[in-house]
Length: 90
Image 1 (cartoon, rainbow, N blue to C red):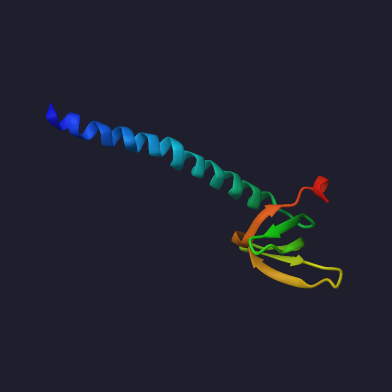
Image 2 (image 1 turned 60 degrees about the horizontal axis):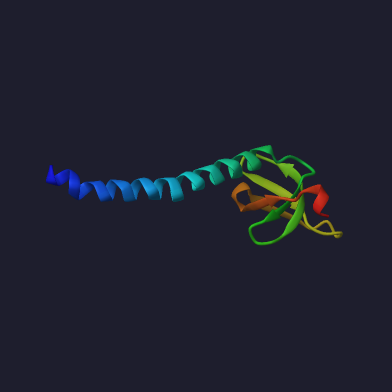
């Protein structure tokens, strides 16, 4: 019975950490993966490096984006995308 009294606070602390930290992170990761999967040609994105561009080609692991009026093209990995630019924010 003393063992239960010793481990109960640790179990409670783990449960609090799980609900406060792990579950929200799983939700954010799921939303990010869904956003990456939904990106397609002509969507405007922001990279993790802060570059804004329009997707012109999609392949299995990469995007090719155009970034300026000079039509500069960059090939980036899908994990390099930070977010999709909403058309209403321009």
